[in-house]
Image (spheres, helix red, strand yellow):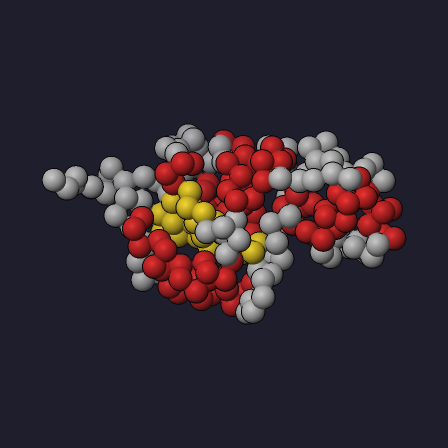
Amino acid sequence: MSVLVTEASKQGVVLMVASGGTERMVRGLLGDRLGCATFDFNPDEDVFVVPNRDASVYSTVHELLKPFERLHRRAVVMLNAAWPGSPGAAAIKDELSRRLADSWDEYAVIVIDPVLETWLWCGLPDITVPLPVPEDYRKTLAVSKHWREDEDTPNDPKGALEHLCRRNKAHIFSSDLGEAAQYISVEHCKDLAFVLLCDRLQAWFPENS
């Protein structure tokens, strides 16, 4: 016997992410810290991970989200802009928005340019607190040419972090990203994709509503 699902009984939002690291980041970020009201959200049921598959999310997003249309009112798709064969952040966002508009009244396409680690560099007031990064990281990255003097963040966010970990003989796991996300300052992080995610969640789940 099938269960009748009404619009009112649907979950607020499903998030499709392209890696386990992004999933952990989402788990660490969601909540009233993003400036939205607390909403009904079960990470085990409302987050769909396509492991290390930015290209798969891009090419089959409509099919991958199809099973969730019956159970969720809104969809958020999160992926990196940098992957082999990527058409670029703007083209990814335009194409996925066009596809999602066919099935979802409310959705958001969050394209992190170039990669997820951008949010760590943009949003952490002190990256050495939650991650195994040496205190002199800026000098180290200047020498390795990962971070030029005229840049606000490293030109290769993921490569810069990996370089520091190698120098520090450390490793960063997906669980570490989730913990680091709890230190990200919403006011400090001005990355466009991050701001869009916050804005959309605030519009869907306004405080004091």
